Amino acid sequence: MDRFTEPHLVGGPQEFLRQPPSPVREDDDRLTYRWRNGYEHYQLDETTGSVEHRPTYRWAYHTTIAE
Image: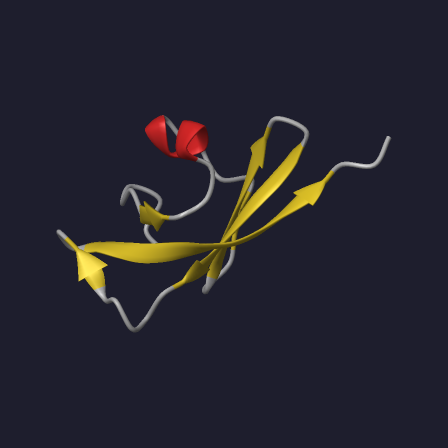
């Protein structure tokens, strides 16, 4: 994904979607964001296509940081 293209995120915590931070990891088919006590993971949704020429990523799962 082009670093200048904002992805279209679908699903996950509503508070997160209002103003998501920059991803901490960008793979070809997954974005990972650090948020609160863990990470939000989004998977590329190829069935939906793109919205306004932005790739669509659908929320997949949350992982918690163990401390």
